[in-house]
Image 1 (cartoon, rainbow, N blue to C red):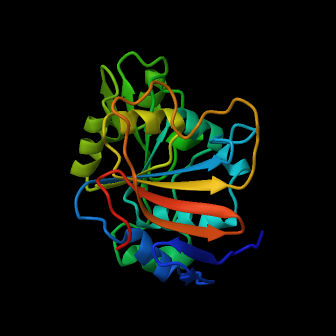
Image 2 (cartoon, rainbow, N blue to C red):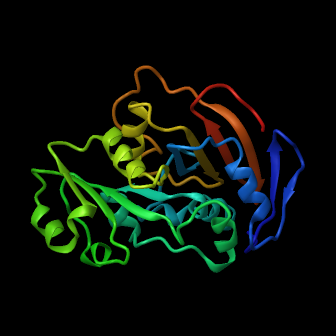
Length: 258
C-alpha cells in the first residue's frame, strides 16, 4: 500500500486519475461538485468487506489507510463542522480539527474559517476533559438528565453547551446552521449515522470499502432498528486505489456524475 496512492475513477469517468497533488485541488473540486449552498449533511464512513465499521480494537483507524485518508482529509477541509457521537469521540480520541497546511488554500477558497468546528452529541455527557478544554471549544448537545451534565457545565462556555429533554438531531443541525456552520460532516459512529438517516437528515454518504475481513461482532456503518422505509442511495462517483473502493452516494434522488 503506497504512502500517497493515486486515486483512479471507476465511475462515471472511468480511468480519470487523481495523482500526487498535496494541495488536493482536483480532488476537492470533485468532492465539492454538486453541493448546493445552505444546509448540507455529508456522512463519511468506512466498512470492511465483511461489513464491520471498525477493527478488533474498536477503532476505524485500524481498517483505514492512505487512500481513505486522502478523501477524509479533503472532506474535513471543506466542512464547516464535524459532527460525531460521544462514543466515537471517546474511542477515536477526538480533538478540535486542524486543517493541514497543504490543504489551507483549498479551504480558504471555499470557507472563511481556518478549520472546521467540532460538535458532539451525547446523552450521558461523558467526554474527556482535554476535549472540552480544546481551543476552540467543541459544541456539545446533551440532555437535561445527562449523568455528567455538571462536568460539561464546568468545562464549556454556555454558548457551546445545548441542553434539552432529548437530543433532537434536526434541532442540532438548525443550531449549527444558525451559527454559520451549515455544511456538516458527520463521521459517525454507526448509532449517530443511523439516527440521522432514520430522520432523513443525510444528503450524501462517502463510504470507503477496505479490502479486509475482520470477523467478530463489530457494528455495521449503520446499526439498530430497521429503516422504514429503506433509505435509497444513488451512485455519484466511485474511486479505487490499492484495492480500496471509495464511493460517494446521493441520498437525495437518482444521479450519476456531475
